[in-house]
Amino acid sequence: MAMINLKLLKEEAERIGVELDETALNNFDMLAQMLVDWNGRINLTAITDPLGIVYKHFADSLTAFAAVDIPQGASFVDVGTGGGFPGMPLLIARPDLNGVLLDSTKKKLMFVDYCLNKLNLNNQGKTLHMRAEEAGIKLELRNHFDFSISRAVANLRDLSEYCLPLTKVGGTFVALKGAKAQEEIEEAKSAIKILGGEIVDVKQLFLSDMGERNIVVIKKSSPTPPKYPRASAKIAKEPLGMPKK
Image 1 (cartoon, rainbow, N blue to C red):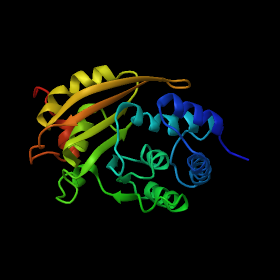
Image 2: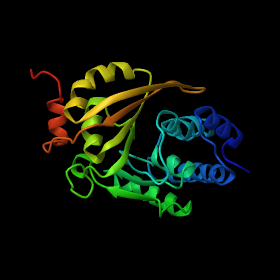
Image 3: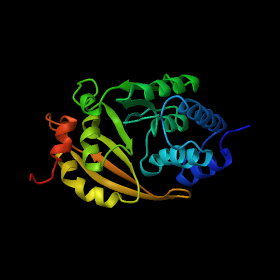
Image 4: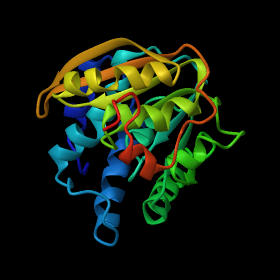
C-alpha cells in the first residue's frame, strides 16, 4: 500500500506542467517512506504527514519546472539541499538531469546519499558536503552549472551571492519563494546586478495546500566579480547592494 496519495501527487504535478510516469510515482512513494523512517533518527524535517509530504516537499519542489524550460541532460546545483529538496524530486521527475546536492550538514547528506542509491539515481545525483560560499570560489565549481536552484535557505539577496557564482554565464538561477517574494525581489535587485544576474521572470503559482508560491528566475548575463561570494559572516554583516550604515 502506498504511503502517500499518488493520484493526488500526479494531479498536482500535472497542474504544474510535469508528467510523472509510474516509475517516478513509485520513487516518490519510496522517498516518502525513507523520509519518515530516517526522520525518527535524524532531524530532517518537521513535515512528515502524507499530505504535507505531497505538497510541501514534492509538489513545491517541482514548481521549478513551471517557471523555466530545463533541457535534456542539463546540470544543476541545489544549494542548501537539506534533506534533498528540491534536488531529489527534480531528479525523480527528470532522471536525465545531472544534479549536485550541496549542503553543510553531513548527517542530512547521508540520508540523501542513501535515497539516491535506493532510487538508482546515484549516477545522476551526487552530494557535496560544503558551505555554499566555499563552493563558489572553487575553480571546478565556479561558473560550472547550467542551473542553480534553492528553496527556503536565505533571503533572495544573500541567496543570489551563494548561487550566481556557481552558475554559468547564460545559465539560470531559480529561487523557490513564498508569498512575500516581491519584498525580497526589491531588496535584491542591486545585489543581483552586481553579481552578473538579471531577473527575467517571476512565476506565480497557487498550490492547493500551500497558497501562493513565487518562482524567481534570474539569468546570469555576465561573470560574477572574483571577490564574490564573500564569507557568510560578511554577507550577513554587509548586505550586498545595500547602503552601508
